[in-house]
Length: 386
Image (tube, rainbow, N blue to C red; front, side, top):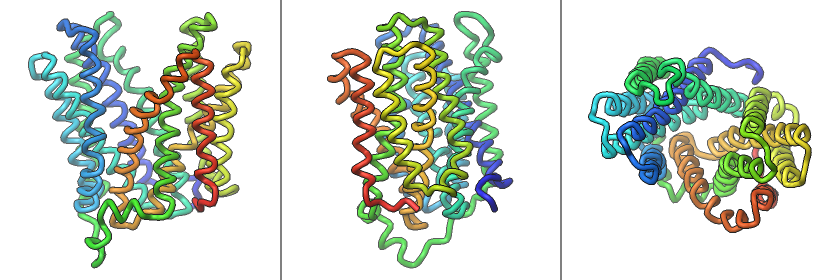
């Protein structure tokens, strides 16, 4: 089938991807509102957020190994159940710092299980020449879910400064139960294991695969660059006296063009190849961020951020395809989970390192991010992604 047209089973996966992201991006802000409502101090809010982030860092690789044994459909079922349990804890348990931390930790674990299962499903069910298109559509649906979730806060919680969090958690519970209902349609049987799967199924053997380390590093840097852009663009706006509305519009342009690049990814790689498209995306986003550090007029900033968005949007699905293509069939979930753990580590380490550059202001920090992205070009030299 042409990479331009998603199959029916991909549509089901896209719906699951959208729902899991919408659930999390609905429930996580609501847990912050709930914490504020019971008087949790601002300094303690970070612990609630960290509880969500810690689960992927600690559980990613074990969950990947588990998924390779029980199958990706079963892991999505487990993830949906854990996510529903997290929402019900936040809904039904007395709102205290402890229950908020517990609910967010469970949410992080459920979210992780769902996305490991979903990304592994793509790796197993789509041919190599269709992986780029499939992962492009998948990440587009995830981005759409991340936009839908916050929008539902106003719909469900009302327009008050502090929304009705009980209704929001109830809605999030309902959404997570949709994941549970959809999981059987994706298949719950374990994948047959080859006779030598146990011998070569360890993490050490996976890390020895040619190109895997480069794929992990490139993925972590691209994800960290996306996060850092969200941090330093508002700081740049403040330095230049731009209004919050303008900064919000700039961030929206970046996000929209990232989504656009993912829709057309299958066509691009079919014509030019994965390697050239990934290299071009890194060059475009790196140059764009460096140019953004110049004293540009606002209309030019919109154009530059559109280019940055196109470049950064390509990196995530292409590194997914690169990594899962390198991994043996019986270790694809483990490879997906290793990538997620690497991304999380990058989101922690890279901002800490670039914090030194940020002393010189947001412009210097953006140049540092550009240099970081550009440093991946030598890493990709000689690598075959196709």
